[in-house]
Length: 217
Image 1 (cartoon, rainbow, N blue to C red):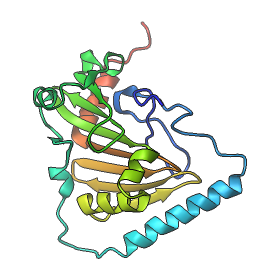
Image 2: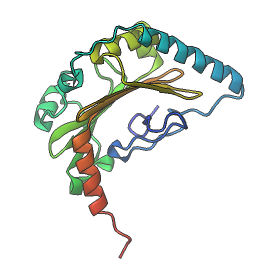
Image 3: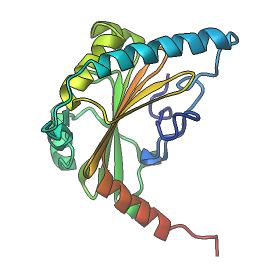
Protein backbone atom coordinates (compact mmCIF):
# COMPACT_ATOMS: atom_id res chain seq x y z
CA UNK A 1 0.00 0.00 0.00
CA UNK A 2 1.40 3.41 -0.98
CA UNK A 3 0.70 5.80 1.86
CA UNK A 4 2.21 8.87 0.24
CA UNK A 5 -0.29 8.68 -2.59
CA UNK A 6 -3.16 7.37 -0.49
CA UNK A 7 -5.04 9.47 2.00
CA UNK A 8 -8.59 9.62 3.30
CA UNK A 9 -10.28 12.81 4.32
CA UNK A 10 -13.51 12.93 6.25
CA UNK A 11 -15.05 16.02 4.72
CA UNK A 12 -18.59 15.14 3.74
CA UNK A 13 -18.21 11.66 5.15
CA UNK A 14 -21.95 11.31 5.52
CA UNK A 15 -22.08 11.31 1.72
CA UNK A 16 -18.79 9.73 0.55
CA UNK A 17 -15.07 9.45 1.32
CA UNK A 18 -13.08 12.28 -0.23
CA UNK A 19 -9.48 13.23 -0.80
CA UNK A 20 -7.39 14.95 1.83
CA UNK A 21 -6.52 18.54 0.99
CA UNK A 22 -3.17 18.42 2.75
CA UNK A 23 -0.33 18.34 0.21
CA UNK A 24 -2.85 17.70 -2.58
CA UNK A 25 -2.78 13.94 -2.00
CA UNK A 26 -5.44 11.99 -3.79
CA UNK A 27 -7.05 8.76 -2.56
CA UNK A 28 -6.60 5.46 -4.35
CA UNK A 29 -8.68 2.31 -4.38
CA UNK A 30 -6.33 0.46 -2.02
CA UNK A 31 -7.14 2.93 0.76
CA UNK A 32 -10.78 3.69 -0.07
CA UNK A 33 -11.99 0.29 -1.25
CA UNK A 34 -15.23 -0.03 -3.20
CA UNK A 35 -18.21 -1.48 -1.45
CA UNK A 36 -18.11 -5.28 -1.52
CA UNK A 37 -20.63 -7.19 -3.55
CA UNK A 38 -22.61 -8.01 -0.45
CA UNK A 39 -23.55 -4.44 0.31
CA UNK A 40 -25.98 -5.43 3.05
CA UNK A 41 -23.19 -7.25 4.91
CA UNK A 42 -20.91 -4.23 4.66
CA UNK A 43 -23.68 -1.93 5.84
CA UNK A 44 -24.45 -4.22 8.75
CA UNK A 45 -20.80 -4.28 9.83
CA UNK A 46 -20.61 -0.50 9.56
CA UNK A 47 -23.80 -0.11 11.59
CA UNK A 48 -22.46 -2.40 14.28
CA UNK A 49 -19.17 -0.52 14.40
CA UNK A 50 -20.94 2.84 14.50
CA UNK A 51 -23.26 1.64 17.26
CA UNK A 52 -20.39 0.32 19.34
CA UNK A 53 -18.49 3.61 19.01
CA UNK A 54 -21.57 5.70 19.84
CA UNK A 55 -22.38 3.58 22.90
CA UNK A 56 -18.85 4.07 24.16
CA UNK A 57 -18.85 7.82 23.48
CA UNK A 58 -22.21 8.51 25.06
CA UNK A 59 -21.10 6.58 28.12
CA UNK A 60 -18.29 9.09 28.60
CA UNK A 61 -18.96 11.78 31.22
CA UNK A 62 -19.61 15.27 29.89
CA UNK A 63 -17.36 17.91 31.45
CA UNK A 64 -18.18 21.56 30.94
CA UNK A 65 -14.62 22.50 31.91
CA UNK A 66 -12.91 19.94 29.68
CA UNK A 67 -9.61 21.46 28.52
CA UNK A 68 -8.73 21.97 24.88
CA UNK A 69 -6.14 19.19 24.61
CA UNK A 70 -5.61 19.94 20.92
CA UNK A 71 -3.63 23.00 21.98
CA UNK A 72 -0.97 20.76 23.53
CA UNK A 73 -1.30 17.83 21.10
CA UNK A 74 1.93 16.08 20.11
CA UNK A 75 2.59 13.17 17.77
CA UNK A 76 5.82 11.18 17.95
CA UNK A 77 7.21 13.89 20.20
CA UNK A 78 6.44 16.70 17.74
CA UNK A 79 3.86 19.39 18.46
CA UNK A 80 1.87 21.42 15.97
CA UNK A 81 3.78 24.64 15.17
CA UNK A 82 7.11 22.88 15.80
CA UNK A 83 9.91 24.17 13.52
CA UNK A 84 10.88 21.94 10.60
CA UNK A 85 14.47 22.04 11.86
CA UNK A 86 13.48 20.42 15.15
CA UNK A 87 11.41 17.82 13.29
CA UNK A 88 14.35 16.83 11.09
CA UNK A 89 16.62 16.49 14.11
CA UNK A 90 14.11 14.25 15.87
CA UNK A 91 13.21 12.23 12.76
CA UNK A 92 16.25 12.25 10.45
CA UNK A 93 14.87 9.35 8.37
CA UNK A 94 11.79 11.30 7.28
CA UNK A 95 11.60 11.66 3.49
CA UNK A 96 10.93 15.00 1.82
CA UNK A 97 8.03 14.65 -0.62
CA UNK A 98 8.90 17.10 -3.38
CA UNK A 99 5.92 16.16 -5.55
CA UNK A 100 3.47 17.23 -2.86
CA UNK A 101 5.30 20.26 -1.52
CA UNK A 102 4.58 23.76 -2.80
CA UNK A 103 7.59 26.02 -2.62
CA UNK A 104 5.71 29.04 -3.93
CA UNK A 105 3.19 28.70 -1.10
CA UNK A 106 5.65 27.87 1.66
CA UNK A 107 4.48 24.24 2.00
CA UNK A 108 6.86 21.36 2.81
CA UNK A 109 5.74 17.75 3.24
CA UNK A 110 7.63 14.89 4.87
CA UNK A 111 6.78 11.20 5.04
CA UNK A 112 7.80 8.84 7.83
CA UNK A 113 7.01 5.11 7.86
CA UNK A 114 6.68 3.36 10.07
CA UNK A 115 6.60 5.58 13.14
CA UNK A 116 6.74 4.33 16.71
CA UNK A 117 2.95 4.39 16.99
CA UNK A 118 1.62 4.26 13.42
CA UNK A 119 2.08 2.54 10.07
CA UNK A 120 3.07 5.84 8.52
CA UNK A 121 2.50 9.57 8.76
CA UNK A 122 2.71 12.74 6.69
CA UNK A 123 3.93 15.92 8.36
CA UNK A 124 3.08 19.18 6.56
CA UNK A 125 4.87 22.43 7.33
CA UNK A 126 3.82 25.94 6.36
CA UNK A 127 6.50 28.63 6.51
CA UNK A 128 8.72 26.20 8.38
CA UNK A 129 6.22 25.31 11.09
CA UNK A 130 4.21 22.08 11.43
CA UNK A 131 0.55 22.72 10.69
CA UNK A 132 -0.85 19.28 9.77
CA UNK A 133 -0.29 15.67 10.85
CA UNK A 134 -1.93 12.72 9.08
CA UNK A 135 -1.29 9.23 10.45
CA UNK A 136 -2.33 5.85 9.08
CA UNK A 137 -2.84 2.62 11.03
CA UNK A 138 -3.14 -0.73 9.24
CA UNK A 139 -4.71 -3.85 10.72
CA UNK A 140 -1.43 -5.16 12.11
CA UNK A 141 -0.84 -1.93 14.01
CA UNK A 142 -4.44 -1.85 15.22
CA UNK A 143 -4.07 -5.36 16.59
CA UNK A 144 -0.95 -4.32 18.49
CA UNK A 145 -2.89 -1.67 20.43
CA UNK A 146 -5.66 -4.13 21.28
CA UNK A 147 -8.12 -3.60 18.44
CA UNK A 148 -10.29 -0.76 17.18
CA UNK A 149 -12.15 -0.39 20.47
CA UNK A 150 -8.93 0.17 22.37
CA UNK A 151 -7.75 2.63 19.71
CA UNK A 152 -10.96 4.65 20.19
CA UNK A 153 -10.40 4.63 23.95
CA UNK A 154 -6.84 5.89 23.48
CA UNK A 155 -7.79 8.72 21.13
CA UNK A 156 -10.66 9.88 23.34
CA UNK A 157 -8.40 9.69 26.40
CA UNK A 158 -5.99 11.99 24.56
CA UNK A 159 -8.49 14.41 22.98
CA UNK A 160 -11.61 14.01 25.12
CA UNK A 161 -15.19 13.49 23.99
CA UNK A 162 -15.55 14.33 20.27
CA UNK A 163 -17.74 17.23 19.22
CA UNK A 164 -19.36 15.25 16.42
CA UNK A 165 -19.64 11.72 15.01
CA UNK A 166 -20.45 10.97 11.37
CA UNK A 167 -20.75 7.73 9.44
CA UNK A 168 -21.57 6.15 6.11
CA UNK A 169 -21.71 2.57 4.81
CA UNK A 170 -17.96 2.14 5.27
CA UNK A 171 -16.54 4.58 7.82
CA UNK A 172 -17.20 6.14 11.21
CA UNK A 173 -15.53 9.50 11.92
CA UNK A 174 -14.94 11.20 15.25
CA UNK A 175 -14.49 14.97 14.97
CA UNK A 176 -13.04 17.50 17.40
CA UNK A 177 -13.63 21.16 16.50
CA UNK A 178 -11.71 23.56 18.71
CA UNK A 179 -10.64 27.18 18.31
CA UNK A 180 -7.90 27.28 15.68
CA UNK A 181 -7.50 23.47 15.56
CA UNK A 182 -9.36 20.43 14.31
CA UNK A 183 -8.86 16.68 14.66
CA UNK A 184 -10.57 13.81 12.85
CA UNK A 185 -10.28 10.08 13.55
CA UNK A 186 -11.59 7.85 10.78
CA UNK A 187 -12.50 4.25 11.59
CA UNK A 188 -12.57 2.13 8.42
CA UNK A 189 -13.19 -1.55 7.84
CA UNK A 190 -9.56 -2.47 8.52
CA UNK A 191 -7.73 0.86 8.75
CA UNK A 192 -7.66 3.91 11.00
CA UNK A 193 -6.68 7.46 10.06
CA UNK A 194 -5.87 10.41 12.29
CA UNK A 195 -5.75 14.00 11.05
CA UNK A 196 -4.84 16.98 13.22
CA UNK A 197 -4.35 20.45 11.80
CA UNK A 198 -4.00 24.14 12.54
CA UNK A 199 -7.03 25.80 10.92
CA UNK A 200 -5.48 29.25 10.73
CA UNK A 201 -2.45 27.91 8.87
CA UNK A 202 -4.67 25.90 6.52
CA UNK A 203 -6.72 29.02 5.75
CA UNK A 204 -3.54 30.95 4.99
CA UNK A 205 -2.33 28.19 2.68
CA UNK A 206 -5.65 28.09 0.82
CA UNK A 207 -5.54 31.89 0.38
CA UNK A 208 -2.08 31.63 -1.15
CA UNK A 209 -3.20 28.83 -3.45
CA UNK A 210 -6.14 30.90 -4.62
CA UNK A 211 -3.90 33.88 -5.41
CA UNK A 212 -1.54 31.72 -7.44
CA UNK A 213 -4.33 30.10 -9.45
CA UNK A 214 -4.65 31.38 -13.00
CA UNK A 215 -6.72 30.64 -16.09
CA UNK A 216 -3.60 30.07 -18.17
CA UNK A 217 -3.31 33.58 -19.51
